[in-house]
Image 1 (cartoon, rainbow, N blue to C red):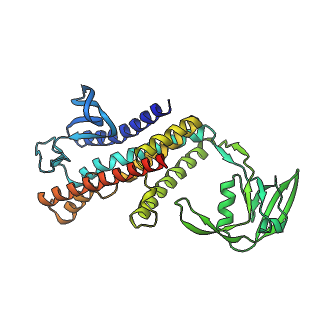
Image 2 (cartoon, helix red, strand yellow):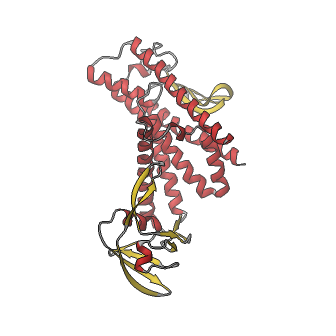
Image 3 (cartoon, rainbow, N blue to C red):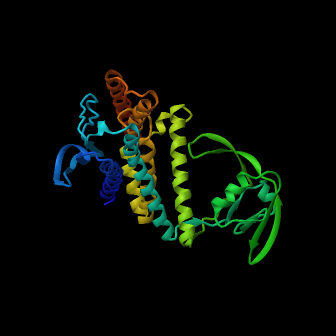
Length: 350
């Protein structure tokens, strides 16, 4: 069941990405020949709105084939009125951006649905207190609930941890203990920690762990919109930063995952409930949007790069340059997919 859900989630995300390209192309008067989910042999197809809609055997992506555009051979062009090639660079960029934009919009919608469903958050309730830590010395105890830090109210463990991490100097904690309010002062200490990318960092801590108590957040309409906006921005920043760190070697290439990781994680999310599936689908949707904006020929970002060149220099890049860069782009793309697959198999074996 989990793997079927994984396939449906991936197909849905690809569909919305390609739908963005399709709608933008039609708006610009470009004839769309094929709208395909998957690659390779066609399993099912039909014709509607003058476009062939198909599902193909290899569900690892999809494509919208516009008149005059052929990634496998950039020299194949058409200069008919309804061709992609006759549109201005700005119109082409609009068509190219529409796919990633559709993924960001879909992620926002998914996060909004999650917010309306009262997402679960970790409460700022103390579990264990590390001996001789600032919290231990100040007198914090297990089951204490931290209500505010320096006058700023905290509702979740995440909010509390952020305030401590970004603090400067002494902290004034308002703590609820057995129905009474206590006021505690302490100064965080810099400790060795790992960030979300697995890098060694220094982080301000007070020496407590969470008790593991959760609660449902009733966010309301405005709160749900804020939640969706913040989560979409956070996920986008997370992935952009992760890609940058991979490129510059700050994160080892072994951290790169492929389609097997996506399927497995989606399957695990299915076991945890539909809210987890929606959350993971939103994250993958943002991932698709970000990765397609990379300036690699054969991806949307690569085509945008060619059109920006045309806008700046008032001429198209030479066919030889486009062909060579496109081939290089496919090599990079398949290389990254191969590395992700290799890492996935290594993790499964290990």
